Image: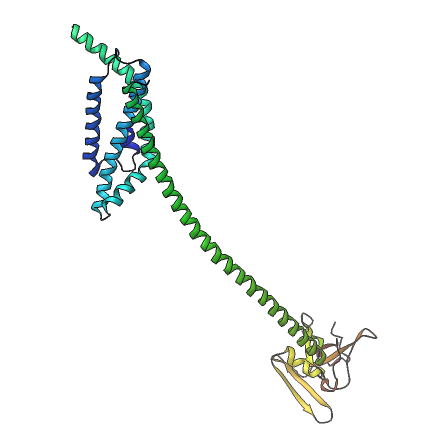
Length: 129
Length: 196
């Protein structure tokens, strides 16, 4: 959101806010879903790193697609055909998407494992009391 | 064998890479088209500019030729004028402090010393005496009186001195490079001093 807010060519919000909300909801839902399939016992540290980067990249791509769709909708509202508007928004947003995905690959790759283990320890402490 | 879970993530990673690289390629293709179109546009303008510069060079060349022709015509005309005219130096001396030189004044062939006055003075009055010739009575408002009057001189190149002729100025036919002086002098004490 930090990168999206400051560097997105489409700006912070406006008509795009609902689409950003949908994108973030999907990311949250996907995180929750992945939590059910992930555990230290099942996969190694290296695999965790790899999966976190792929999930990060995939969710960022999905998020960018949804927000670009929102932008395409605003193009369409100003008279452009929806098909052309969507293609234009996706192509024009491509450089930003690349930066967004690459940065999230690093963020997910390097922060997922330490944060997950910290949260796990916190939860254990809370359960033990 | 690769585990099913790992394979799923590998495919997902490949999908992300495929989609991202495709959109980036499309973006750069669009950018390329935009800049190529601008380049073509600019190249068109450059062609037009080049044509204009070429035309301008042609026109400049023609203009230079015309200028040369005009210059030659003027030169020929000047030679013709030189052949039918001559140049003289004329001095108008109102008093010892007021001398006006009119050097290389063009005069038609056959002009007289009297005619030089009309080339350099605005207001000339004179009297014509039958048999004697012209007597100048005033030049530019400076008029003859009982003691002062207008006299004319010519320079003798052979003796290198001013000559005060004893005949009227309209009787003297000018030669090339003559020097003629008109002096407002006191003629009570004769002969008056030379112009310079």
